[in-house]
Image (cartoon, helix red, strand yellow):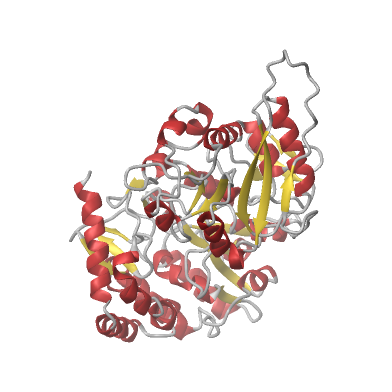
Length: 510
């Protein structure tokens, strides 16, 4: 799974953090938690290591019950003779990036923190503020094995591991969650194609008085062209996502293009225009923020789905009555082999100011052992959770650790027992590197520093034109023409040229 949190104006590709973070609790003013590891009373002759407390900074609210879990983690670290205890501090999302940067600049001695290219990682690397991890990763077998080679290989910076990549999925798989009971009611077969989907959506519109066809939050609607294209989830002749909003890379022409100009998804923009005009999409789509609630209330027959281990879980409560009324539709699902760059959005980083880099990596390695990973990620067994087989678990408490800051390991992940069979099928699909096609731009991470002025000017076009185009509010022909004009007038070509140059550099090094 990928996760990123943007500050300021809303942008795309951000997974909702509401399910990943629990409510705030605390015993200290700054959210810090330091385990009370027992005093070492063993004889001097023992081989017990002296305990060094490592300080970590992570974003968000402290999870409910975290103090007890951290105490258990530190007790086990001591029992396993790792020689470390953790002091974990949670900082508000609203100030996390700035706060960490200030602490780094001031030379504060902390040992690990969450960073990412969408935060300050590129700047930290440029200022030599992050520890290079290649040699230390190679020496820690559990850590190395818990993360697929593809994640290690394609999440480097200038050829170096500058942070432990944190994720569970290996690429993006998009689709819709639909009301299976309505599909069966209309006598329609299982949805396989976009034509099948269209028949379902128009059947709802024609036959249901109290149920509307399709709801999606406005901010997520820029995913619609990826979902509603005949080329969806297929590795054809274009890479649709390169980690830069509004732009794509054509492998056929080897050129950076605007997503709106991509011939591979031109049909999707036309389809979105039609669906908005016909009332398949809500007329309120631009302001819609309650799609999840509306779908759960039974007011819509379809909503947005992503195989990320989060989106589908939002609706599991709808099946508590024992019914089987939901199913996942993934366009071209029977032959899906999407492109992916194996890019992750979050990294566990170690500042060069840390005096305990090796020990911090020992802890990361220790957390790559299943029972230790499960303790931090899911809590105390029997109190916070209980296992269901080797790969699933039942929730017993409100403890919910944000694994994207520290513990996400694709080979160790468990899925909630409440996950529907369809959701688990596609989530498992998305965690397997073999189900994806390697993008030719793998290894590319855009650095806008050289064109930051122009990039800042065109960024607002996402919300003002690109998003309405993707929502259907702007008809396809009008929206595309407006984007072309505005991009040209604001220096968009300079940004495209810089993206192109950086991709060319990546390609030349392969």
